[in-house]
Image (cartoon, rainbow, N blue to C red; front, side):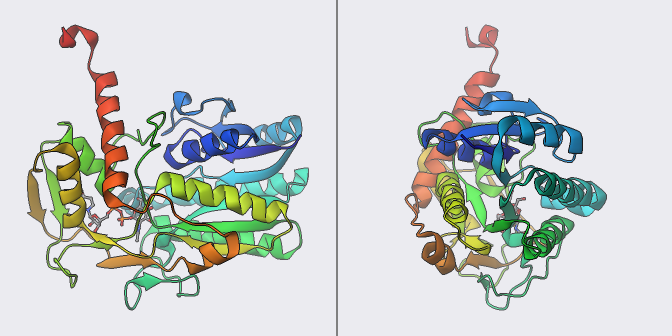
Length: 334
Ligand code: UD1
């Protein structure tokens, strides 16, 4: 039986995908260097601790496990950090992807699913992006992912493989059953930060910009629940295994929420208002970014199941409460 190799499978999105793959009866091997991932997030799959840029290690794993498809999540993902340390992003996100593709070529792995990002679009004319919207990333994170997309397309054009590139919009929420979640330290993502504040880890929450040309002046984003996103990966795998052609697909719900709407949802879920500080715009932020996801629905026959901000926020807050319980030493509970 063939095995799916998941790089970064101990991380936030990767671990949710691994869980769904296992539930569908797939054999899964994870490579993760645990720099931001967690061993305990890999439940029921083999975990190899190492770097995806390590040609020898990845080659050994591919040969030993009869890998037929790669799902590539391992990456750095913090936009402000990418601006301060671009080479870290080009090294891990771009160069390591190149090595991974070389291993695929050497070991005859012909199916590849790649975690890309809405950050490849940069500023769009109307805040809505379909897959043909010009790509003009405005930060090294987006550029590092776009460069990997280009490599993939060029490599697939030789006939060596077929790929599905999934461009994630704002991924949020956690496993509705509370088994795994978003544990990344020093998170900057809005819903995670709001939930950390709601459970008392942060004293306040900053709104970065209240003067955008949006209905309430704050940034608007397309928040997609991580399990709906994970399901898109399983559909993409089916697509490639069924002989489907290479694709680039946006992953979002096609509508957005403002920062203030997210804050209100977290306040509802937590039963108390948040302590909000209004600050100037964060450099590099866009007023609005919403996915046109018609192609994802059409090509992969994907349908969302959790398109509900209160549900998304509820799962995120529950996970944050669980994390807090783990952090509190037993001596201080008594
Ligand atoms: C960006 C990337 C996205 C990437 C993600 C992960 C772009 C266009 N998008 O999303 O592809 O996956 O980072 O790093 O580059 N906000 C606050 N206060 C906070 C945090 C955020 O007001 O404490 C606001 C932001 O200004 C923005 C919205 O909330 O309007 C969402 O921000 P965030 O969750 O950080 O994600 P993006 O920057 O949209």
